[in-house]
Image (cartoon, rainbow, N blue to C red; front, side, top):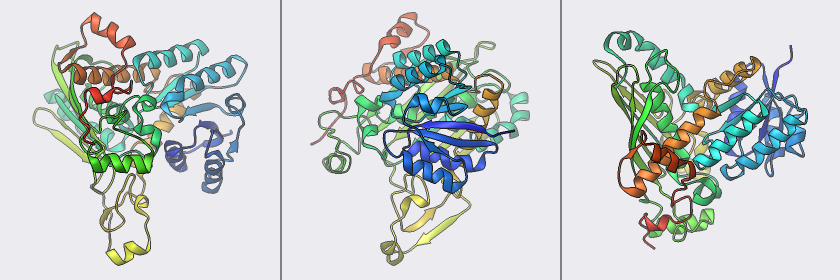
Length: 416
C-alpha cells in the first residue's frame, strides 16, 4: 500500500516546520510543492530528510493532480485565490481527498466563510490546522485529570499565552495583508486551546456556547522610536503609517448548554517576549485540581559563553524565535512534536482516508475567526461584545477591524 501523498502550497516558515514534522509521521510523503518562492529549497530539504520525493510544480492545478491532499501554507492574503484554484482543479477531475489550511482560516469572518463555502462546493473534506489543541502535553493533562473531572466537574478557567519577539516575514507585520497584528497571528491559538480544555470530556469541539468577548489591544514595544526604526530597517514596515498591535489580552466567556454554567478562557499574546524564544504557557483550573504547561521548561539546557557565542551565531537552532546565542539556553530537541504538528497531520490524514473532516474542520476555523474578530471589535469599542445578540452576529459578517484596514493609528499609540 502506497503512502498518503500531501502537497504544499507555500514554502515559507510554516511549510518548513511541517516538513520537519513529517519526519515523525508514518506512511505520509511530502510529494509536491507549489510556491512563488522557496519551492526548490523545500523540495531539496524533503528529499534530503527522507520525507518524500518532493517535486516542484508549476501550478496549483498540476500539484492537485499529483497528490492526495493539499496544504495551504501560503500567506493569509492569498487564501481565497488559492482555494478557488483548488476547487477548480477538483471539479476538473483532480483526485483530491482533502484540503488543509493553516490558521487563521481567514483575515475576516467574510473571508473565512468564503473558504467554507468553496470547500463545500467542491465536496472536499477539510482540516483546519490549529496545532496547540493537538499538543501531547494538553492531551495528557486532560487524560490524567479525567477522574477528577468526572467527580468534581469540568475545568472552569483556562489561561493561555503565546509570546515571542515577533514574526520572521515582512507581510506578517503588515496588518492589511496579515489581517491584524498579534491577536490575528497568535490569539487564534490561545482562544482555541482555551475553548478546547474547558469543554467537558467526551463532548463535541463546539459544545460550549460562546457568550461574550472582552479584549484590549496595544502597541507597546514596536511603537517606540527604537522599535519603529528596527521595523523599518529590518522588515521595511512603517508603523507610523499602518501600525498593528504587538500585545493583546482578553477573556472569552462560554456557557455549558446542559448545565448553564459559565466558564472563562483568558488569552494573552505578544510580539515583545525577548527571552529564550517562543513560549507557550497554558493552565486550567477546576475544583480541587489544575494543570500547567510551559514549553520553556525543557529537560535540556545548554550554556554558551560570550567567546563561543561570538564565533557561531545560530540562535534558532535551539528554539523557534530565539533571540540569543549565548547564556543559559532552553533547547527543545523536537519542537514540531512538542507543539502538536505531528499529531494534527496524523489526524487529518486518518480522517481524509475515511472521507471525513479532521477533528478541526473549516467550520471550526470559522468559529475561531469570529471570536478573534469579536475581540478586535471589543478593543475598538471599549466594551464587552455580546455574542448572543443577533445584531452582533450580523455585524461580524462584514466587520473588518480598523487595524486590518490600515487605520490602527486611530486607536494605537505610536511614538515617532
